[in-house]
Image: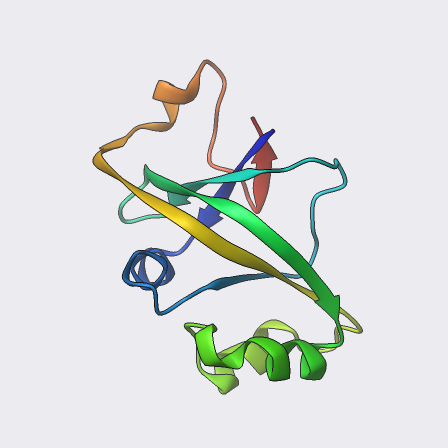
Length: 123
């Protein structure tokens, strides 16, 4: 199963460059068996630009999560702390097998009634 994930363009570029090997989330998928993430690069790009395979999904306190993932976080500590402020737990999705599409696609290329997800959407 695939999930469409909204990611800011600056972080998308870090995923493609290999600088960012973890995608942080406050909440994670309820359905099991998510194998691939389709990347929707938010505005101003507003396109589906690639995908990656899901490795392990880490769940722990933000401080433990940072200690495990900071080397390839693709974000600075200040941003990270602000993102997880007042959270007991956070999630880090391991990114592997990244594919950058030669030609970015519109959301409509994925099917009818596909809109930019606030966080994620099952495909």
